[in-house]
Amino acid sequence: MKKLKNIILGTAAIVLLTVTSCEKYLDINTNPNAPTSAPIPQVLTNVTVNVGFTGGSDMHRFTSLIVQQFAGQNAPGTQSREYARYQIQPTDVNTLYSNLFANQLQDIEYILKNSQGSPHYSGIAKVLKAHIYSQAVDIWGDLPYSEAFKAPEINQPKIDKAEDIYKAIITLINEGITEVKATTSLLSPSGNETIFKGDRVKWEKFANTLKLRLFLRYSAKDAAFAKAQLDALIASNVPFMTSLADNFQMDFVDATASQNPIHQFENTRSDQFFPNKFLVDLMNSTSDPRRPTYFTDFPFGSGTYKGATPLDPQSFAFSRMHTFLRGELKRPLVPDAQGRVPSNPANNTAYTGAAPIRLLTFAEYNFIRAEHALRYGAGAAAALPFYQAAIRASLTMAGVSAANQDAYILANGLLNGLNLEANVAKIITEKYIANYGVALEPWNDWRRTGYPVLVPVSSSIAAETAIPRSLFYPESEVASNPNFKQKPNQLTRIFWDTRP
Image 1 (cartoon, rainbow, N blue to C red):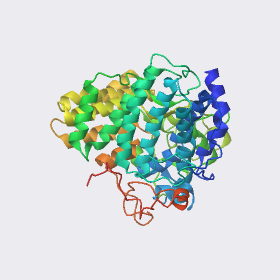
Image 2: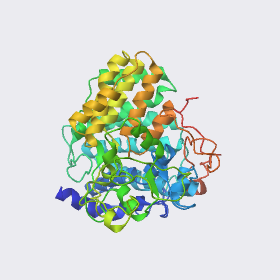
Image 3: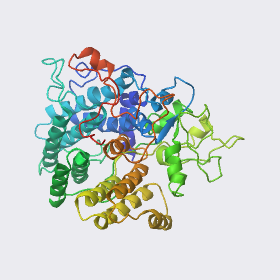
Image 4: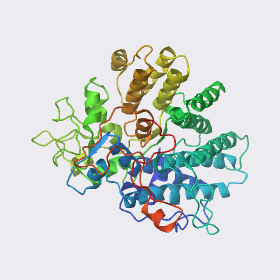
C-alpha cells in the first residue's frame, strides 16, 4: 500500500485536470506533455492512474446525470445543474476528450512503440487501448482511429465508423491477451501498474470480460451476432472474473491530491451533485440494504433517504453520496439543525476519500452472464444463478451483511417465468443499482435496452427533446480537424443503439 500511495502521489499532479471540466484542452496531435523519452513503467503508471481519474470525473458526471443516478443542484448556470438538463455543450467535453486521447491513448501509443521484447507491457497497453476506445465510441460514435496518433505525417486524421472501431478493438484485445500470456518478457509490470498491480492473470480475466461487455452491445442491433460471439467466447473456457478481487478498478488513498475524484469534486464543488430522486426512490421501494453506504440519510439519523431532481429549488436538503463513493468515515458527520449534512471542511474531511473508482466489476460480469443466459441460452432458470450472484456481489461491495443479503435476494432475486422482457427489465434495473458510481455503463444499458424506464427531464428546462443518446463532439476537434462534422443535437445514436 505504501508503494501504491507513492505512485499515486507522484502522478496525481498530472491527472488532476480530470477533476473539473474547466481546464484547457490538449489537441490529440500536438500534446506538449506527451513523453519523448521516458521509461515505459512510468508511462504505464500514468495511464492506469489517468484511467481511474477519468472514470470518476467528467465521464462519470455527464453520464450519471443523463441516466438519473445523480441530479444537478445549485444555482442556474452551475455545471452539474446544466448537465442534468442535457445542456452539455461542445466546449464542455474538450477536457474529457483530451484526457482520453491526448493523455491516455497518446501514452499508450508511446508504450506500444517502445515495448519491443516486453509483451507484458504491450499486451496490457493494447487491452487498455481497447477499453478506452470503447468508452470513446460509446460517448461520441465515429472517431479517428486508423489515422490517429500519426503526427506530423497526419495532423487531421480521418474519422472511422464506430462499428469498424469496435471490430478493430476486439482484434486488439485478442492480441493483448496473447501478449499478456507470453512466457518471456524483458520487462513485466508490478506495483507501478496501479489497477491489478502486475497480475497478468487478472488482466486476462478483465480482457475476456470486456469482450463479453462489448459483444452484448449488439443485442438490439444484431442478436444473432451477439449470440454467436457470446456463445463462442463462453464455450472457449477462457478465464473470466471469478470474484470481487478481479474488479477492474483504481484504488485511491487518503492523501492530498490522491483521493477518489468523486470525493474531490464533492469537496471543491459543494452542494452541486446529489443522488437522484429516481435512483433513491427505486431503492426505497425495496428497502434496499445498500442505501446506508450509498447515501447519507435525510433527515440525518432518520433512516430515510431523499433524492434530488433538476426541478427542485436550490437546496441541500437531500441525501448525499456516502462511503461507497467517498471512502470510510474517520469520524462522525455533523448535521445542522434542519437535519442536513453541510458540505463543509469538517464533514468533507470526515471521509478518507479512499473509495475505488469501479470501472468493470465482478457484479457486472454476472449480470452480463445472466442476460446472455436469458436471451440466448436456457432462459430464466439458467440466468437465475448469475442474476443472484450479481446481486450478492453488489451487496458485498456495499458492505451488506450475509443475513441481509439473503433477505434481499429472497425478496428481489427471482425472475418472472417465461416473460423475457420482464426478466430483462429486472436484470438491467438491478444492474443499474449495482453500477452506482460506474461511469458510462448505466447509460449504455439504458440506450441498449430501455431499462430502467426513465422519464426525460421536463421540457420546460431541458436542452433536448429526449434523453441524449450521445454527446456533441468536442469543440477543440471540430475547430482543428475538418473531418469532424458536428452533430445537430445529442439525439444522434451510436451504431449499436437501435432500440425503438
